[in-house]
Image (cartoon, rainbow, N blue to C red; front, side, top):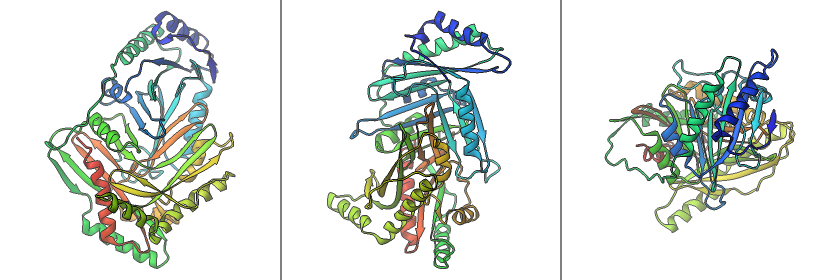
Length: 477
């Protein structure tokens, strides 16, 4: 990858931009017939969600990723729009294929702009389905999608960075592409920083149709408990889905805004398939983040509702911390992550006692696991080892996955699967796609899951499922 020092306001200077793209085109050879130009520039603060609302095409590809953390003060939001280059992958080697695609693309990339800008340079946005092959023939999303957007807008605290990526080959009209980039930049940079407000769904009539009803779900839990008692496996995560039908198409932007305001500690995300469907959610679970060779992975398992009073809330939280069943379920996730990292020669560090991660309607046992990563181990290699963790699959993993395939009637697709980004230096962040919904016009498919272990009770597991589904249902508008 070639890095060229910062040129001030290059995206606003049509003449400089034209000359740069022309020079790039003229430098192409028989060996290097394609190059990617990535230009980063600072702009006045804008809300990336507003940019997504104003700029994205209904059937265009996008990726939205946000996490508000008012305590740590490092809130960020990223909107990635349209595709400069992309790849879909499937099969057992999908993470390796994705890694090779990213590294090959970066070798052809010319990066222009100052490296001091947060989130500058090319970022690849990825979504991987729960299974490495599509279970259903009509799946909305492939087993893996990786794309470099034409436009990336990121806000970190009070700093806002825009990145324009363009694929250059011998057949493009440099004058046309220069004008197109210039116009779109002006359009994005001129967006006023408006504050989106929450939208109420009280006037919207939503029809809910369970994919599998309560009786079927409790029967599945009882069957799982029998297999656990027979030592077939020690844990399995069963999910339930509901179809939600609205009188009018769901509003992607309003739903995302509701989610980010209601669940500020979660990853709020949206990714599209380029065909008009979106997968959205507010996930409390970070699968992996790597920044400057420092890794953090979340062990998140064991749940309880929030209390209506401070005293009740405290009792429920303490009960969760003292629950033998939940501690056992949580420890299985820790052991799995530690074992997988250790197999790669990575030495993880974590607290022996879990904490509480408290959201507005639910609280979880949470243990962040940290490690220093050797520079030669790519994020996607680690991701291939971690997904899926026992928090969303089971123990032993392969047996649990086989059982999930056999007993769940709804395609998981991107539910409980990794979604995130990777930059040119190997930094990246992936959340687990839980507390999520697939949006298709006026129809939504909501998923939620629970971990079944010895001591689980079908009624309580169903109540937890309904609590998780309600959180997303309340945000849809």
